[in-house]
View (spheres, rainbow, N blue to C red):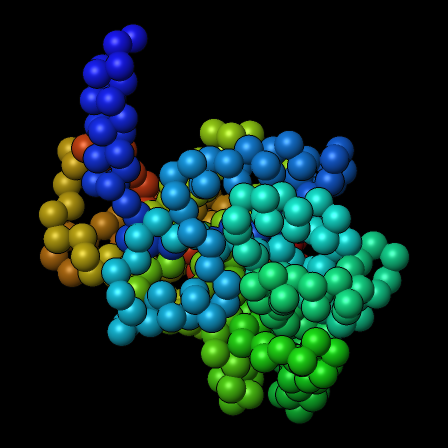
Length: 349
Ligand SMILES: [Zn+2]
């Protein structure tokens, strides 16, 4: 290849990179990173490094909690190629393998820890967490004992004491051990209810991280930060698919995010920005955890209504709405969680 051709190609590449700069923020939820991965939530160091490499080559900047909260606030400057890399639970493998790889790539992360795990055989020590903070990382609260926080929703008095312990007392321990300021609550299993959200608002948390699908955007509620979970079995294509999910702002969700309902077979939401819907332009889809749904979209009021054949059994469920733009090939996603009252089984993060 001639030198001139190479220069022209480089310029084209740089231009296209500028044109496609992302204005929404994908956040990843990792758990473990190890030389040889074991388990659903453990990633090989090789895969992890390849993913970081992909982001680094495209000039992505990683955000800690403070920067993320600033970026999604309505008064933020323009968002451009920013990403959030989080690690749930506080495994030692994050310190041993992910941290050096992140340092090498120039990234900082957010670790979400629960005090009853820290210092145990498989976990980081408080001292190691302090080192991460020194390197620009954030350490946030992932409850006291990693329990399903929707499990006591049927007993208000017990629930209140339970949430104070799992959320407020857990944060106090983290802050006193690390001397940091915990800003975010990170729901175990991604499970939240309207009561858990109220608890963190009353306790002056600045926001919360979910595992609801989609990307974050300027103006999204800081209590509804979305993350894509990365699994052991994800190959590069799967990673890029999760990373590529664009933001899809929704309003008027029924049930509302975190709502506890007695029974449910129908859900709906408004896709307010979707003014030009047609099946020729877009592919619309709705999904829930473990249930097949059929849906319709009413163009006049931009409302999607979906139903399942039989009522949801008691438990926690994710709803996901997808919108693929046929012209650009980009899929936008917005997920949220609700609970059907009764005995709860964790959904599995
Ligand atoms: Zn966890």
